[in-house]
Image 1 (cartoon, rainbow over the protein chains, first blue to last red):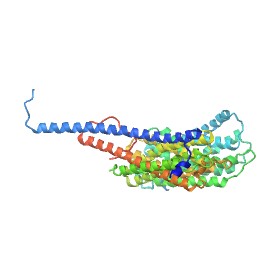
Image 2: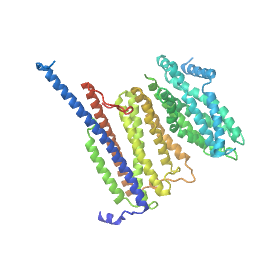
Image 3: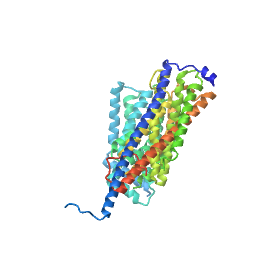
Image 4: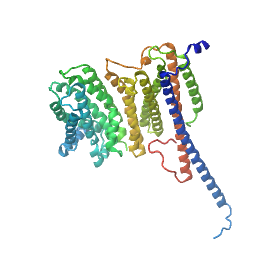
Length: 75
Length: 222
Length: 240
């Protein structure tokens, strides 16, 4: 295993290295951009669920209040 | 009289009466040739340049006709009529494709003669070119009818056909120009790979013909 | 349940990617002709193969959609094509970088595989405006399936035609792509291909899960009679 590593040249930072690095960087960047877009979608889903949960809770409370004998409320 | 013949006859008669597509297609082609004369700054063409100018122009002229292929059906309820009639719906596909082939042949009869007149030294290439055109027209008709039948029910009708059809017919164009280039060579028609290119055209026709036949029913569902 | 199996899939993908990248830079030998530049082959070609198979898979899902009428297949078809288009962008950019490194130009017309891929990409890029132009949801799904099937049939035909058109005098290919690959390179390549294919499947599943979650939120909203939010996508099929 170490012989293998010893035999391979260190990453040549000449012209060729830049292009190879560029290609792999493009791949990584696209992947990360995609993850970012999905993260935004997830945020939106979370926000909507929070909103819906609040809505459902307030409705449940409202029903509970209506089921109890109504208190005297001002005109 | 079977459905295919009925629809085809109706279309051809309507076109003959109203002349809504053919004159436009033909004039467009001839004018485009003139534009190419000035755009390329050449008075005679041969080989790949001739092949390219000819096929590009024919393709764009064809798109004009393809755009209008189903307009009558859409505006006058032809689609509903086909749905209700107890016939094989693929008859509509076959009939429309056949009508388109006829329009393209008429277009080519005039445009190719004009092309030869404008740019070619001899008409020797025209007969073998006819074989190429027949096969290419068939492929263009199958793909064009398929796309047109979908585009007619959409919003950006006139944009959708050129948008989707152009990449779809690239293999067809590659084969057509590949066969035509040696035919239009300066020294006289050559037949390099002529058979191979015709085979590619035939393959394209087969695939898109079968495809259209297989899926057209689904396109007509409401 | 779309999210099921997403975790093991992601773990497998990460493991495979790590292994593959390690093989590329520490194990695979240097190419005699192209030198270090050849390493781009290990990311570019697997991306291309995966994208193309993805397009064909999108076509297969489309056939299933037309035959069953179940809109879930349309969602699978859409996401498959969508993911392959994104991978396609990566293919074209890495292809350009490879071309620039090999021949000094960002684009070359006589590399038949790259040109074929461009044409396929251009066709599938029209999938979005095509869907957008059809307003009725059911019809949009049906027409999109027809498109996906036609485009799927188009892919092999296109590659054949472009390859034939290439000048026989001066064919340029990305070297090692076709000729016999030495054992170590083949192993590395296959690992990379597996990794990228796994990545594609994982991301497709990920996207479907997100769509499903959105679909459930909408369903909840309807059940609660809550007020509707702003616009939702006109083209991405709903999953519920």
